[in-house]
Length: 289
Image: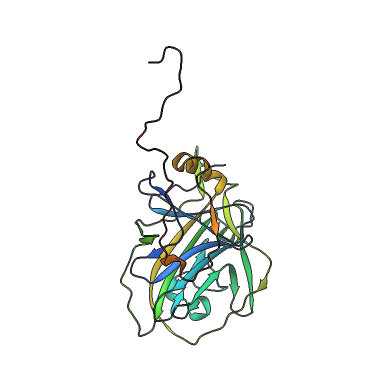
């Protein structure tokens, strides 16, 4: 297999971050592997943010509201509103089709939701082109495969959000810049359209209990982007990560934190070089000088 969607911007920029904070917002976003109870490292590559996944992963997107006001979260998985029957435009969503967070509350979104029943279908990584992807089943195209897009709406009468680009913010103190545009799930060869198969898409498992209720709060129509995540398979990203970070010096996951507001703790992920002032010696070869 191979990487399907390359980032915009400088592809030499590659680093792991534990979380993302959008510019002009007090939200914090992260990702969890719900099946293994581990935290994903998000991979900043160029101007985009990637979630390195494997087939069968049950993914969850964590969100913390650090504001003193409630917020609503329109969320789209492969172009589909995470709530059944929800509008395709985040400005048009009613509270029935958004998650809501009280001040200083956090939650993990890990399922397609049913607003008329206490049920949800877990978000599970599947192969694109097999018919199991959410976008493929909904729109009959793999164009939106492996994409999650999240927006923020503030309470009616509360703070007004200034316009901001997608994926501009901070990850572990590092400024992240760039708009992540939707990539194509098809390539054209010799005038024929060739569907990409084998890459990571997001599917839905069997229905499970998921509790939810309406808070009765109403929200401004102003919807501003929070984060755009791309899914790529870990196996496809590994060679690039090894070359950039060094073999056996990094990991895809980190342990579930035990402290509250762990995102405020000092942390940085930078491989520590060994004796950086000493140049790398070339292997001896006959005749080499």
